Image 1 (cartoon, rainbow, N blue to C red):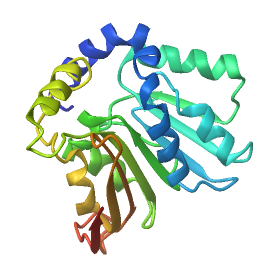
Image 2 (image 1 turned 60 degrees about the vertical axis):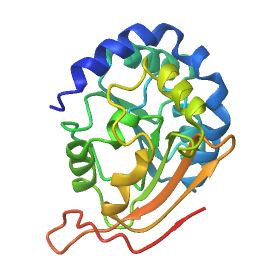
Image 3 (image 1 turned 30 degrees about the horizontal axis):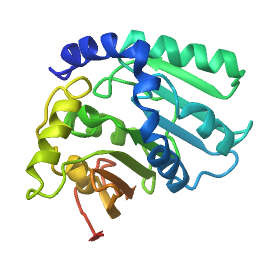
Length: 223
């Protein structure tokens, strides 16, 4: 298990009761990320580190009744709120798994994966390797979250580090949180979104002859 999981568990246990309220300002970029998945009716999608499940009803809507949404979350306090959301909304095409990224066993290979504000997860090579080893070539990836401003904006970056202490256990890679994902892709793109401290990564998984991610980045564009 990733050594950061216990620390993350403590952070999210404290954060869970007010998480939806405190993340209300990122709903716009989350909606952009869900749209970037380009989900079709009948497809399956994985909400990696689903938290309290804010994205789940949006994903369930896009794949339709014949589609499937799977979410996993290591924090019991966060997951119970996701379960409550699923029950209250009557979502019958959503499955939730109590697990972390490094150990989760997916019920089936998804057509697409969403990483929505899961910094610790996208910075874990073990978790990414485990997830992507269970996927097919061409699986669509979308990741979004916070990244540092350009280095000249020191005050802004101090503010980001200060305000994200409650949700991030390790600020390693905070200047480009998505930077581990391209090694698993042969097609990817990342753009910084307004106000400059958020990113939107899109890509497609590639595999080697033995079925494991091989690290060919293909053509990369950052805008």
